[in-house]
View 1 (cartoon, protein in one colour):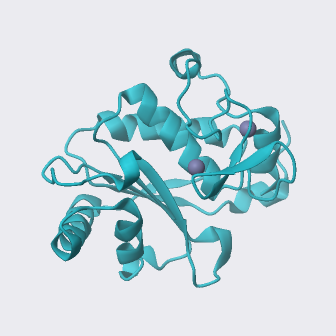
View 2 (tube, helix red, strand yellow):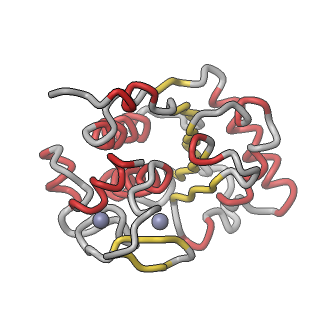
View 3 (cartoon, helix red, strand yellow):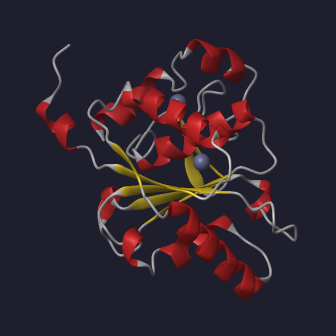
Length: 206
Ligand SMILES: [Zn+2]
Ligand SMILES: [Zn+2]
């Protein structure tokens, strides 16, 4: 297969793993591999002090508001140097120690574009590992990755605004809201496409 020259310069994904066990980290790698089918050349890097940085951010946000809302967590992260470099970023959050009002509106994934006008190369995802099965977590990871890599971003058809974001109307697509569906386990087990054809095109074109 010939790779388009643009594909060589995909913005890297920096991973900040705030979890204690590797289960969710490995599922995240599966989701990135799934995305790589449509974004060849995608690079991933582990931020070495990810755990201590995520722990710090989570406790800071918890101190401020008595809970950890993913959106607030991401906004807080933007204030710190490792989050200011031009890469895509994923935070894996284990909020097990924070039982009060942990998860933003019951969601376990959230993405936030950089609001400084720096474009698509600087977006951040926070994924909570609490309260979802690994299959659900996989669907959510594919979904949030799809958001920062433009799966639905520039589309004018087969999309809808749900949960304040642009989502795909195709129910079996990872970019549908909610992302998890009855086909997720099978697709994860068989490494088959999680995105519908339109969303695959969106990813390729972004
Ligand atoms: Zn979404
Ligand atoms: Zn779709």
